[in-house]
Length: 560
Image 1 (cartoon, rainbow, N blue to C red):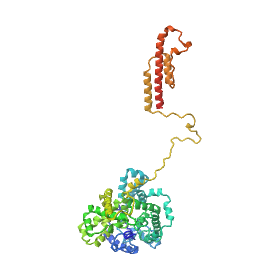
Image 2 (cartoon, helix red, strand yellow):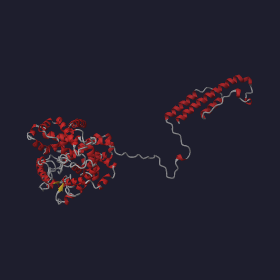
Image 3 (cartoon, rainbow, N blue to C red):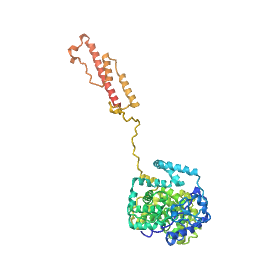
Image 4 (cartoon, rainbow, N blue to C red):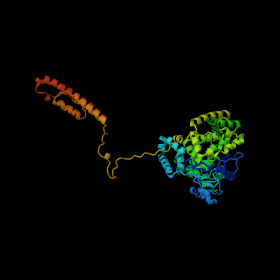
């Protein structure tokens, strides 16, 4: 895989911290005690590189009893896997980590139950109407993710935000099919060696062969079958482990697929070209955020891969306190990779951004140690989240730097060998690219008849469509105009006009004396002249009214 692919991603745990609105200030003494606990856990998790020996990143739990252990009893319970390994006398915190006096972080302040229930109610409303909220109120979702997702709904919310739920609906039974497949032996051996290194002090993974490690093996093996061209990377194991802490194996698998393909595409490929590009992007953005830190790293000629690889590939799951990890992931699933960039820039800025802090970093080794043993203050949940939210780094800036660094890469190293899909920045972009299935609309009749009742349309002729009010008025106006244009005529003409209005238009024969039958001619020839003139006027009137009737009837037919 290469030195970079397997480097620095094996075997550290996470450490719990309470949420910002729920905790008091973390005591400095607890952090020092946590360093001793980490030194102990590092020996169990396997060797690391020389530069990582002094690292304080990772779990801060310890199994040694202490006088403050009883203080955590109210917030803890026994874990099944810990009982199976002889740790039944130990307690676990609300995050699932085994804790003791050396891992205690001071008094915890719980969120009032009423406030927690209000937050859960709001999130339940969003999740039950997810498409509507994403389409019209995405900014509100982003703000609530920045405030933190309620623990009881975090796993479900991550599935909705990442699009993993849509993937699961589009691929029913796919995970079971992959799970039943034997898998590639070359990957299975590597995965099995990494299982016990993932969060060894969490109740799910503390037992060798326990349910947590079994599910982790299933998820990672399924991904090697789902993407055989990528295979397995060690950095995927902590990502999958964090997901398994919040959801079942099948849902965790599809969320892992979304992270690897949509949020961080190319990060886990064989050459790790994407992570190298993002390292250059991070270093370029650092020049604008903290020129002091950028100048120092440039002078020391420290490659970004030496300090940011584990940060980015594990999404800070093995670097930050656990409560900070969860808050960062809440924002990461909603807003995308820019959150990872912002967190990295905040850590670099506050670790190397002042001359006082650089006095202890005279060389490369001291600088790397400074970045691996970050101050608890800058990693504290409330401080870190506030800095991340306020840091002005946008998707547009990241994409602009990506194009610049890609051009430089092509000029110096040639074309990229890994053709990864384009990166999508957050939940909204993913939903627009992969919309969920729409429900099929079923007809709902407004009038329900008894089963034995015949339908009205089965007998008789269908009724003509109902006229609108406007059409009725136009028809009345046309009829009124026809009545106004009618001249005074004899009774026969009036009868003919009335017949023309009442009946459909027909050919009206004109009474021409020359073509009439002799028997029907008028007996008084002396009155023929005035009668002929009156008769012609009657014929014209009849013809006129038959035309008007035709026009009115056509209008009526048109409106009907």
